[in-house]
Length: 334
Image 1 (cartoon, rainbow, N blue to C red):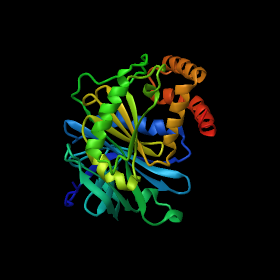
Image 2: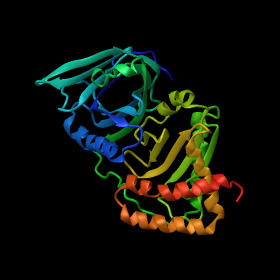
Image 3: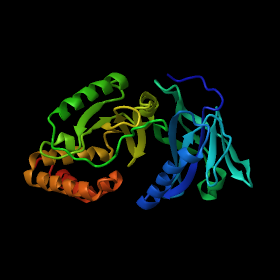
Image 4: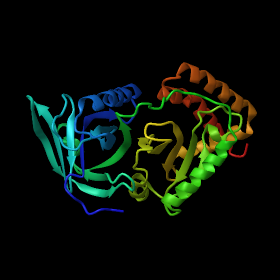
């Protein structure tokens, strides 16, 4: 339910950087990886339950401004090299530390496209339009910019047994189809059929004979991002769900508990988005034994090579996935 706006909806301390839309993987990993490690150690006034939040905005011809930070109760100190964002009813104030003191570096009017408190958390999420922060301003790229939420995730420093993200493949489990059906019913119930237009089981757990990480990939069709985000992001805003804007679509990671084992990946996009090509890949492997076995062997090898690096494991499969998907799309009935 949308709430009446109040002052200081969201206060964040983090980093911001312009990164190419062409996808410089190493720079992206360096930016986010460095902040993940540093934020919880260097930033104070976060409380026991910590929330990471990210925003992105297009800048120039082929770049995006990435902001990634941690929510704070108040802005008392800003570590060197970081900035603080304070978002209230109609203003974004950006601060940083200069000569040992906190200084305002830009203060701009913003317009919320939507602003809602989470169904479970009570914390605000939203997306807005406004100028770029002063230090990222580009005279050739003037005018209001859209800032969309690109990350929303909870952690706790008190968690004594955080889940490992190691790549651990298991043989196909027939119960995965039932797990899909159960989550599909939950999604329809919580999102409504006017938002969740279609729900499909895809990824390796949907293909018999393929080893997979024991988590179920689900694909949800929505009418549009602008229509769905104000409903979906607040619905998933709690400590058992992580949200990431990835490959130009929404990805929600379901965990057993806070920082627990992953159980589901829910990918959300309109019907014409390229993520839906994953169904062609699924259907092709279901009916082509040779390619299915090649993929199984590739996954087993990569699971050894990149056991502790989920991102690189996924990227290493890309060439094979693209090759088979292209073949499937060219020959949809074969």
